[in-house]
Image (cartoon, rainbow, N blue to C red; front, side, top):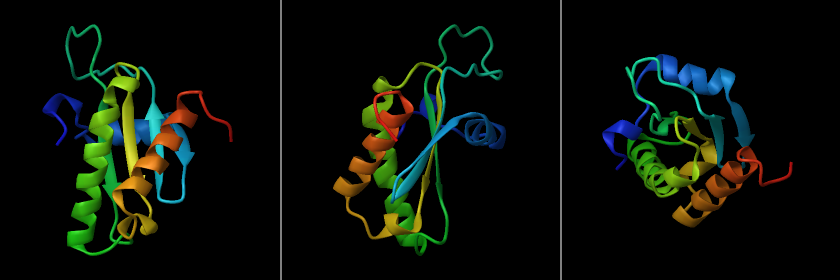
Length: 123
């Protein structure tokens, strides 16, 4: 599970990451990253924490499958928080194939998308 300070909760924060951030698509997921965004809701904080949110629609599967995908993605993102710039907003949107994918495939797609967004990958 992600710590409380690393969770995206507000609709506006999701919208900011999706509309103003960069996007990298992979077969199983799409990652939106808004680097170094300041948090207008946190008063006086110099380096806000990186925050992540997840979007898993009914196209991925039933409730059990969607929750399983969310748990896997939360675990994967938690391990990668230190690689992201402070104050970043990250939204991971699962695509329909994510429900059938195993942990390793999700990890591989997440790593490839983050590497591309952070400047280390090619198109």
